[in-house]
Length: 84
Image 1 (cartoon, rainbow, N blue to C red):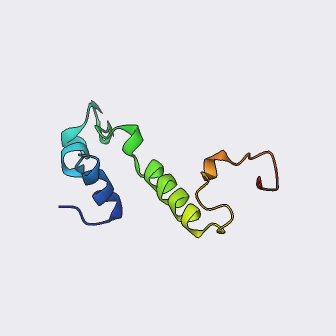
Image 2 (cartoon, one colour):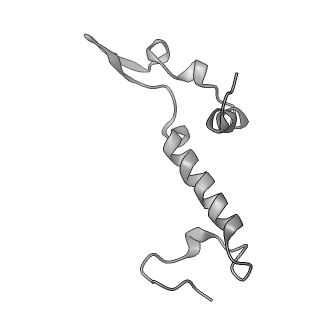
Image 3 (cartoon, one colour):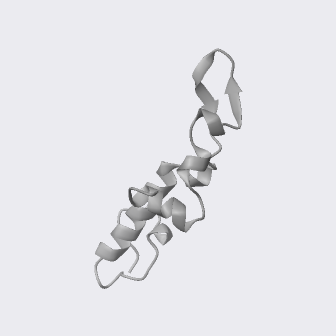
């Protein structure tokens, strides 16, 4: 059962943590290191990409009306001023 926004995002993408996380679901384990294992959760569904996606969505919604609708990813990081 999903309990938070991240869990709901996983469910929307056809994944459940119960089937992917934890040492019982590990792809690989390291003998003698009970808490060290390779998770079955694909990297694209780690919490970091989720936070990135949600942050970009939030920033795009909060953008000034003059730039709303343009992808934040289209802005160059080499320039201090956004394109007009």
